[in-house]
Structures are given as C-alpha cells and as structure tokens.
Amino acid sequence: MERKAGNIIVSAKEAVATIKNGSRIFIGSGCGEPRHLIHTMVKDLHLKDIMVFQMLAFTLADYFTDEDFLQRFSVKLFFVTREMQQAAFEGKVDYIPTYLSQVPRFFKNREIVIDTVLIQISPPDEFGIASLGVSVDVTLEAVKSAKTVIAQVNPRMPRTHGDGFLHISDIDYLVPFEEELRTISQEVTDEKIASRIGQYVGELVDDGSTLQVGYGHMPYTLLRYMEDKNDLGIHTLMISDVFIPLIKKGVITNKNKNFMTDRAVATFCMGTRCVYDYIDNNIQFYFGTANWVNNPSVIGRNDNFISISSALEVDLTGQVCSDSVGRLFFSGTGDQTNFIRGATLSKGGLSIIALPSTAKKGSVSRIVANLSRGAGVATLRADVNFVVTEYGIAQLKGKSIQQRVIELCQIAHPDFREALIDSAKDNHYIFADQLPPLAEDLIFIEEYKSRLRLKNGKTMSVRPLLPSDEIAYRNFFYSLDETTVFLRFFHSVSIFSRKMAQEHWANIDYRQNISLIGVVRNLGNKEIVTIGTYARVDEEWAEVAFVVREDFQKMGIAKYIFRQLEKVASFNGFKGFYASMLPENKAMLQLCRSCFSNIRVERKKDETAVWMRFSQ
Image 1 (cartoon, rainbow, N blue to C red):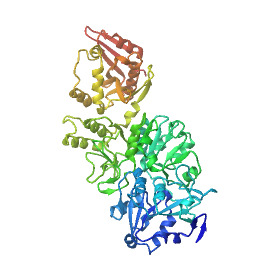
Image 2 (cartoon, helix red, strand yellow):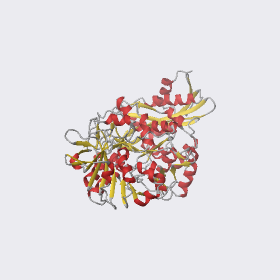
Image 3 (cartoon, helix red, strand yellow):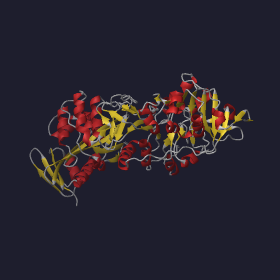
Image 4 (spheres, one colour):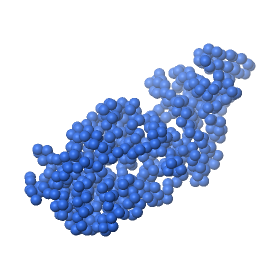
C-alpha cells in the first residue's frame, strides 16, 4: 500500500478487504456506480452478511442468479430499476419506499447507519478536490456519514459543478481504475403516441417556463417535442442526452429563470458519453443534493415552474400509482410528489402527469376505475393538476369527483370509455344519466383549435366544447344578461339544467353538430366567454347560432367565431349556414352581412331568416 497526501492508494482488492463482515454498505448510484469496486467486492468470498443500500442499482443485477451471492449479500433499494425488476418480483431485493429527498436525512440522523461507502470520483485537481460527477443525489451525505470511504478514481468521470466536490482528505482509500461509465440509451417508445402526448403537453408549456422532467422514458421522450419553445429553464432530478440538442438549439437557455439563473439544476446524470462530455466542467450545470434540489420550498422559488412526470396508473378520482403494478414493484416513489407540490408553490406553476392511455399492446387501460389491488398511491388525488394521454388533457385541480371522472374518461382510450363510465356509476361517482364520451378517437378536432389576441390584451383559446365543460358551460349561461339570453333563445330562459346540458352533448358529434367555445384565463381559472354552434339541417346547410358574454363584446370575437365555424363546417362538407334571429337583433344581421357576400334574407313577423353560402 502506498500513502499519499494522507490517503492510501490501493487496489480494489485491498480496499474491499477492509470491509468487515456484517457491514452496512452504500454504493454510489446510477451511472456513477463504481463497477470495478462492486465486482471486486462480490468476488471476495470472505465477505458475508453484508447489507447493501443503493438508490439506482444496475451492476448487482448480474448476480441475482447466484445463490452464493444471495446468501452473502442482502440488497435494499430506494428505487427499482428495470434491471432489478425481476429480482424484486422474486423477492430477492428489499424495496424501501421513500422520497429520495429524505434519504440524506436518514444517513445524517443515523436512521440508516452506513459503515462503508463505495463511490466513483473524477481525478482530484492540483488542490486535491475531486468531483462526484454524475451522481451527487444522495451520495454526498452517505460519504459524510460513513465510517469508511472507498473511492474509485476514474478519468472518465466528468467533473461537475455544484455540491459534489470532495477533498481527498475526506476519502480513506483511493482506487485508481479507468473504465467507461455505465451508459443508458433512450428507451424505444411508440412515436405516434409520444408525438400526440407531446403535442398536448406542449400546449401547457409556455415560453420561459422552468421544467422538471421526471425519471422514466415517457417524460424524457416528450422533451423532443419542445423544439418550438423559447428560453426554457431546467430544475429537475436527472440530466440526460435529450437535453443537449435543446440547449444547443437555444430552446433551453435558463436565462428567464428567476432562481439559479443561467444554470440547469439537477441531482444526477444518466445517458451516453455525449452527455457526460457535455457536462464535464460545464458551469451551465449545477448538480445539487437531492434534499435541496427536490425540496418543494426550493422548487417553488422558480416562477412558472412545470413538473412533468409519468405514472403506471391513474384512477378516476385522480390517484396516481407510479412505483408498482399491483404488488409488483416497477420503479420507486422518487420525488414526484415533491415536484408537484413545488409547482403548486411556484408563481404561475403547474404539474403534468403524462402517460399512454393503455399498456400491454392496448389490452389494458392505464386510466382505471380503481387502482390495481396492492398498488401504492405515489401522488394523492388532491395534488394532481393535469393528466395527459394521447387523447387529450384532463384538468383535475379544484374539480369534483364527478368532474374528474368525465375529464379522465375523455382522455382514456376510446375502447375503455363506456366501461369506465359504467364503473363510475356503480361507484356512485357520477349521476346515473351521465352520457359517456364518444367512443372515438377525436384527434381530428385538434384542427379546430385556434387562438385570438383580444383588444383587452388577453388571449382567447378557441376549441370544441367537451362534456367536461359542463360546469363552465352552465356558469357561462348564468353569467349572461337577460337581454342576451332572450336574443339567443327567442324567449326568457332562467334555468340551464344538467338535463339540458346532457341533451346538448347527445347531439354533438364534432362533424354534423359542433359547438366551439372561446376560453379566457381569469387568474387561476379559465372562463368561457363565447359559444358558437352549428347543427345539420340537411346535406348542404347547417343552422348556426352563437353568443358572446357582454363584457367581451365589441372585441371582434363574434366575427372570429363565425369564421372558425365556417372553416369547420366547410371542411365537413356543408355549403352554407342558416340562421334564425329576432327582427330586433340587428347586430346579428349586420354580422352576417359583414362575413358573407352571398346572403339571402327573409323577413317574417316574428323572426328573420338568413341563408349564407360559403365562398368557393
């Protein structure tokens, strides 16, 4: 053994020989695993009754078919990686469900006592400072709390900025050994599904937002569909290859961040040599400890913070399971809830759960009436904001159970919608007369969406009316002046009941009959300010009607909605509109004349009928 600067430079075999039987070992995680040390430790047959703690474990998966290994080592994981799933299914590893941000405190408070840590570091600089590189996360506190620190010194480990610097005087044994870091390639996803989910998620992400992207292939896949955004920031759990093209293209700049400006904040990095080289000594990245980065109060300091994470199942009340399918553990609790709650604390923040609508090649719905038996609730229904599948966006925050059911059924796969509605009725979540959403893929109605900048500076989003809009639809009706209602319905209407709304939904098919709504944000709420409808009269003609809330009149909304309805109707084969109005509704008649040149007017005693032929 050679002593240098107060440390001992040894071989891996000599270092692991210092581990005593019965020891509790922590191993550096993810792509920061000291693989040479791990293999050497397992091959030392003198080591027995060793308890191993690890966050993201890969290398040990190679040994779970070895009975000798299982007799000598017990493995406890804070997260079940894909490589460890089979061992978890077979009961060969012990899963510890916890927030990753709490793990450092377990070490510090000796709730989990660590005798020896095995880590991997970059070569120390001229001042004796080395870096934990790609794995700061919970590793730093394990190093501080352990009795003995063994470090594999690897020239291939990038030197990262942030909390992960160590002086070699804090390390007991240095093991020089060069090997390539573990690499993680992007998992293959269904591109069609991913692109559709990406399109919907993109609708919720504004320029200048700061993003958290949860661990898993789906959230990271969605980043590829952010290329039309500007000046995004990053405060997240993990950095991977998918961030780098967006940084190079100027999509991610971190310039608009009000907290940790100009820095992408994370706790660890997993990917290929491409990302490892990019983060090496790159001041644009700050790698912090999990108990700081993943702390809701820290997360919430980022304005316009958006949390994007995934799930295995979401039930109709909004409960999210992300770590198991039934009793089979697939991943871990992670810090999904912390980021979601941090988004709630953020000024202008929101959270998104993004998942495909089905699993097992479409045979199983991920939107479920009840979570699978034995499934764990990773995120409470009260915390969930937006849920996104390839069929749309469900907004749950502040919504009743009945509203949540309708929102979630709308974004479930069409094959499962009716059964989900039936289950919700059996569970008394919804009214017995509730109609199910159309059992059809409504992706085509995305073409009907548009936006209009209003004279008051607000932006109005125009989209088709959906069953989940029932409460907002009824609120819109009750917000109208009595005169406006009279001109629209030809008589006084004082009640707009659930029955009336249900009758409306029964006729909507988004081709022959459709309603477009204009929605404007009012603080944290989105309010309907206009509704335009057309309904089939015959093969050529559709009857049209619309109404604009009084405080949004004279802003060009009526003409815009009229034009949007014309586009939709023309696309669906109609040749013109028919409108019936009261004689005193001169504003409506003038609007018809301003929108169409080919117009025919018939005046009767109690009404005026107008035919408007579309331009060819």
